[in-house]
Image (cartoon, rainbow, N blue to C red; front, top):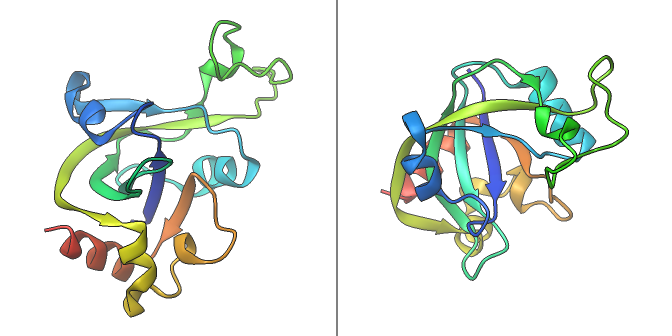
Length: 153
């Protein structure tokens, strides 16, 4: 099992939206960064655990936990002209973009803010807190995952 952090703007998709979606599950689509895409396509697997992170908001931080409930698959939104994730250069025969489905596991009792993450010595090597780390999908170690979930309880 691997561990990940996935970012979403809460005005777009929040932890509550995931919780309230049918079967508490939604497609994690619209990733249009090649490195994040490679994580989804090549490394994320069924059963992996996810820290759900609210970004671009008043208090960015980890707000919940989700589980990957599908194998990587084509991001069909890339082929839909009406989708905001449409990519006219993506081809179903040689696709550029991939997605997985994630399922709500838990909402943390307290947001673990970016400021708290940055100031915690146990998280000093976390990808999220390194300079220039802006990926919307990024790896997390098992220790980082456990520590952050504990902070949110």
